[in-house]
Image 1 (cartoon, rainbow, N blue to C red):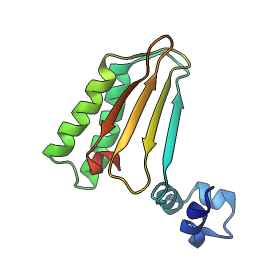
Image 2: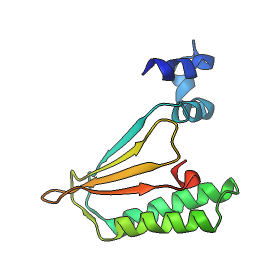
Image 3: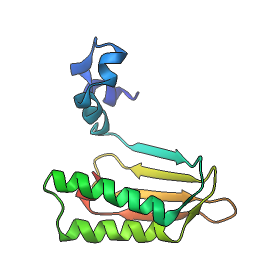
Image 4: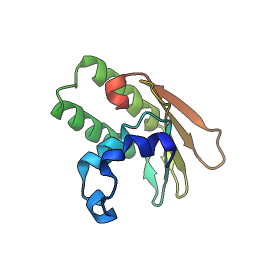
Length: 130
């Protein structure tokens, strides 16, 4: 891990890997560290973009609703994310990359499909990005 992340996780020093695996506070501290983050998903089973989008929509909407952060602006932002995925078809080994710049309320999604130019979308709603 980057030194900034290690410092951000000092409160967990000395805990075993097993303790950290089951610790939701550790996970939350890790993902909230003020550093640039990338999540790269490699598709292992073909899926339509519309199906993937529904899964993203449900997960994000439910989480935001549980935290009372799901308002009209979040709904609109999430709908745009779903529209971005709508026309895609993910074959095996397609790649979806989520980029979260350090200390930013934006995130970029990049989809790499075999034989096609990468497509990108930037999410600008801080609650949806979170």
